[in-house]
Length: 213
View 1 (spheres, helix red, strand yellow):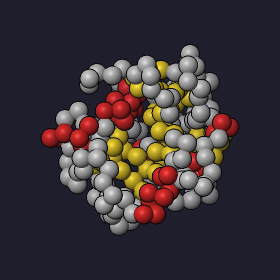
View 2 (cartoon, one colour):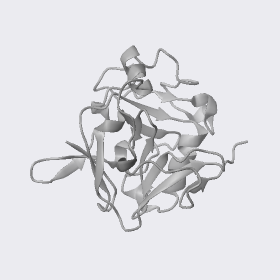
View 3 (tube, helix red, strand yellow):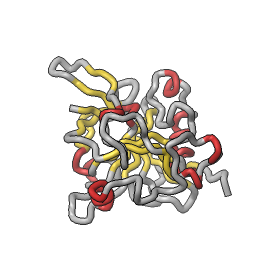
């Protein structure tokens, strides 16, 4: 069973079932948020738990439904930090404050978990890093490494985004079933007890500055 876990092990939640896709989102908001957390602690870069792709051009995302992430069985004393982009953004990105590990982007209809913070545990509680190529990438065959880099149009440096790259999120990148999962019109939504919902205006929310306008 996959486990979403921070670098130091103080934050942990079980994940059930299979993901329905994987992308690298290169938009300003996703990359700036992942970089905001990575810059808090250089250890996140050296131990491989950064939310950024290895080249820094995208935010690595494994897509799950909201009900596939269990409650956090371990929570750090420092808590789980919430991020919003700009003063008017919505607080739907989260990280573990204990060691500054980026955890997830949490939307009401889907979750974008950080594959670098996912582990597989065996019966003896031994864990190995989750292999993201096991996830079905949007529009690609499960088991391939061709994760699509989407939203290149809104990247900090569009020319640096590697192939396969797409200006936005074209219909050809996602199957009908994957689009249905993301919209999740009739499925369970993210619940407050997940620990990943914060009311707008909460003083604990950290603001990722907008530097690209």
